[in-house]
Amino acid sequence: MNPDQNPLATKPVGKLILSYAVPSIIAMVVNALYNIVDQIFIGHGVGYLGNAATTVAFPVITIGLAIALLFGNGCAAFISLKLGENDTKDANASLGSMTTSLIIIGTLYMVFGLIFLDPLLNIMGATENIMDYSRQYVSIILIGQPFVILTTGLSNVIRADGSPKYSMSCMLIGAILNTILDPIFIFVFKWGVTGAALATLISQIVSFVVAIMYFAMKRTKNVHFERRMLKPRFDLLKTTTALGLSSFVTQISVSIVNIVLNNSLRHYGALSVYGSDIPLSAMGIVTKVGGIMVSILVGISIGAQPILGYNYGAKHFSRVKKTYQLAATSATIVAIAVWLVFIFFPEGIIRSFGDNAPEFVEFGALCFRSYQGAMFVAGFQIISSNYFQATGRPVKATFLSMTRQIIFLIPLIFIFGALFGLTGVLYSNFVADLSAVILSIFFIIPEMKRLTKLAKEQELAAA
Image (cartoon, rainbow, N blue to C red; front, side, top):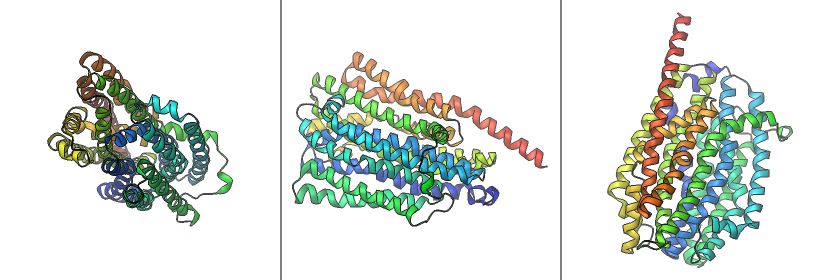
């Protein structure tokens, strides 16, 4: 197809963002719901110690997602750019290279995790009280990682291929099944955290089958899966992983932050009236609920990515600028709405997870109002970082992805924790969010001016 005849180049930007972002939001939220649905049912069926075990497991899940996004998001961004340049050969080859890489790396990740399970759980902050629960849950979650890693990578490509609704269905079917199986395994079969993990594993395998069917049934529109392209091309992997690096860094940063945060909560919680287990469990709820809200923002950015990449590759700079502005505005409105809920209704969110102990609800509400206190700026920062990834500037995208979690948050957890104890740990994220968005402004304003200049030069040349 001629690049100038593709709907990404001709359809109104607002309608395009809506058609791509809504399925992407649903897919991202559904992906985040796997763990949080487990946490809700475990909270009611096992208690806050079981919930704390899922908090410890969270870095395992985010590391797997980071691997998937390194290749999957990078491959999707590369495909969008290549389709804008009308180059389907390299687009197809990148799909094969990504698939083989994710199969190998996902399997190695599972094997490594199972061999070194107990040391990993200690590093992730498991206390003596929750070690058995953590071991039961994480061992099964690791078995599912090769499936969920490949599914996530393929769903990104399916969306870039022009099928955002099918991409969404890959995750949605698994999440619905997980929600059905969780209460059966936990309350009917009395399998506890093991049942929750098994429900997640079965659901992830089903999602994997749905993703594979898209290519097996030849439903593709622009890119095609060919066996001869399964041999990895390292030149393409170098390019695609560079484009996916910012997404990888974002997720790895989440994992590192969770490990640092869990250990800080364990340490400073033991010195407070709450003890170690309540802060671990409550913060797990806060970060996962926050993660769902961030998933909405990431869904908007992922939905905008094919539009940005295609039009940037086709040199339609005015459409690139308009896409960014609409995505950033939409994400900011959502972020402010979520922030208001966190500030005014945190107690209700905490109680929905099955434990109404006064000290547990009190600490959870404090976490929402402090740790998530600057959620209102998250949308702008996420969209700005993704913009540079979508338009082929991986260095800037990676740096912006690192600012909030690695450059600001982790040092602040150590500094504020040493100065103010448990309260300092909670407010570190508030300061990190504000610092990251200020830095993003310095990057995005010159970029918008550059796009305006390029668009005007095109208009003059056409005239």
